[in-house]
Image (tube, rainbow, N blue to C red; front, side):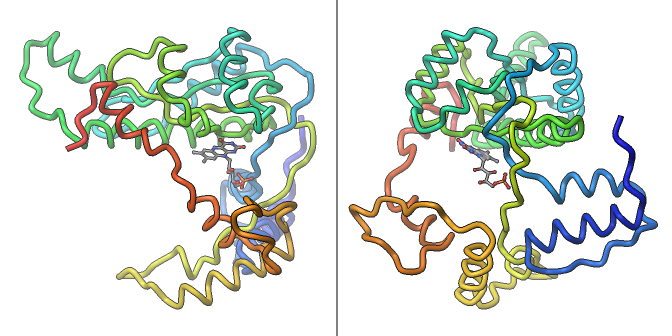
Length: 285
Ligand SMILES: Cc1cc2nc3c(=O)[nH]c(=O)nc-3n(C[C@H](O)[C@H](O)[C@H](O)COP(=O)(O)O)c2cc1C
């Protein structure tokens, strides 16, 4: 069992992680409780390389149970977890996403589902009307699933495992839905690769807190200056190793986060996702 760091060391570790993340040194009171949890949250990183060491199924079930203990809108419990044991099915997904070999290589692959099915089924079972078949059903189930997913990531990191969410499965939503036999109104939110980390990984800087924390009203601030500052800070700490689509956009002299994201979203992505969600029986009006 790992020794807990002394409170001063834990507070320093949190401030260090957040400084790497946001370029700002935050005050952390060493007397606060829960510093070990904050230290883990602050040091979060996605893992895409794993040791060839299995994950005990009982441990995985424990982590799922902790994740499904997350709060749920109106206690409606509109999220499920699918553990994909079948290697052939997993491979059928991976061959469609060849630039993410970690999906095939991870000891565990699972899919987090938004479930808008149970509630109207319960209405039918209890012979009640269901006048709520509109966008909110999709939205509530998706939010619940995202919260379960985020809680699962926390649980995974708490026990020293590593993971990487995979929304790329939604590039093939119909295929995944058929493969996993998802019924009407059950849709995949994201896959997740899980395993024992094969390398330590590192902290990815985020936008400065001035850009993402608002007080009393939405403060748009000087977005251009905030983005420039973030691009520079991120480039210094974690520069991009390659530029996206240089055939179309050329090689940029200063290639930062904003250039990368602008290039990424200059291509149409998942334009068929709305049609998929509608075809699964959700009403989006
Ligand atoms: C909903 C969601 C979907 C994601 N999908 C993918 C994915 O398809 N492939 C991948 O390699 N990483 C994926 N990621 C991981 C992000 O790329 C990662 O969180 C981001 O680059 C920031 O890095 P960090 O998690 O290490 O801080 C996803 C993350 C989230 C939250």
